[in-house]
Image: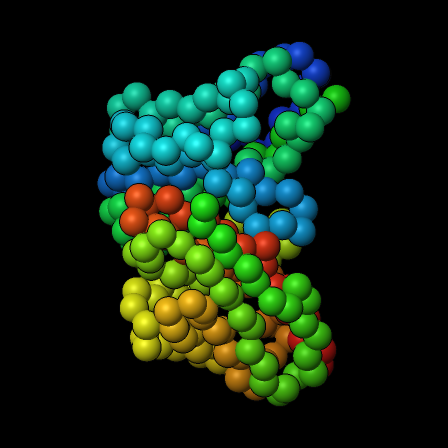
Length: 113
Length: 109
């Protein structure tokens, strides 16, 4: 596609449920980043892939959060046993190469009730 | 740990009133420094990349500069459409991309 696509755009889930957020990067982009952004704050790093390899997951808050990119393209961020504090905007970005600018999707607004 | 600090948090300008935003950073080896613009409800939009001290980039009324410890985004004769949050990000040698909290710029006509 022309840009980074994230789905769903909005997700409301009940506390304790698992959710999966999807990111479809720009075609041919090898690097993919996941961020979480609170209102009025900058994006907070969660994890980063180069092709299918997860290079850095130091920003994942706890073991309820995981991410994968099995074929080096589409990525899924999974949150298990969601809690209210997980409510946020989750953003995905991709870059053509590791050291080039990253382009962001529109984000997924997650609300845990 | 990599740190990015942006100042001021908010900036209110009159149309035509030039100003500068600051991004100071500490990183274990800088691969690149990126500036983004973010409008309400949208994802960050890429503006510039700077790779080495002394480098400058320009786009319309925006000019970004880089030293070994900080970067400046200069806005010359701003217009209301320049109102946005401007984000600075640094990429370390391990390719991790870390963002600052942003500066929200409001330009009044």
